[in-house]
Length: 234
Image (cartoon, rainbow, N blue to C red; front, top):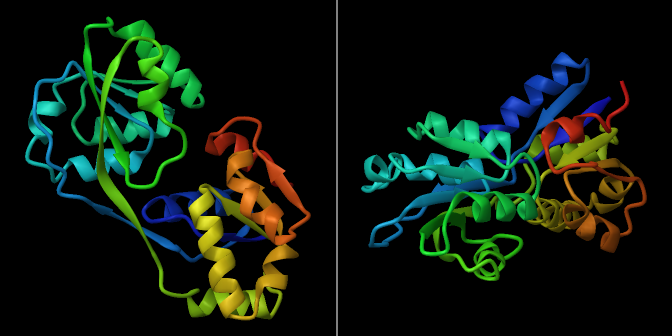
């Protein structure tokens, strides 16, 4: 298949490599850029939580990185745990699932007296701190990175859509989907986007596509890349 990947770098290139290994043609057109935020937070913590590899990458340049990487890090999925280890965490454990799985893991790992730091993005789905508060845990949520949208659809992506040179697209976040649809409208290519086969990481990611009128929408059985790639026909 001829597939569009719009997720931010460096993940877009890694995903494209995996798709090409499976025999697909891939057009990479990142629509968001992940930039670190000079987050200011103080105090002692017993552990660190992450739901995105982007948080681990942003932490590398933070003044408290050396201190925080000595703590246990709990993540929502394997990819984020891998990024945490690359960023310096010796103890990084994946919940291997969705946000609810991370809540269960954190509740089983820390006592109610613990103080935990959640390194997050400015825009995020769900409320991890509120979910953990129901389990009696105190969580400080700190935005350490932000997603900045591209000003327009890259020329090569707009051309591919206008010439109907794509069969499908992979989607990892609701905001990336919304950005794609907004820029496609400006490029006169929204019908072309709606006509693609859409492979979505979760039902939440797929919402803007359904609202825009796309009909061929497939949702991964689990919110991880392996499940997403399994949707794509060989």
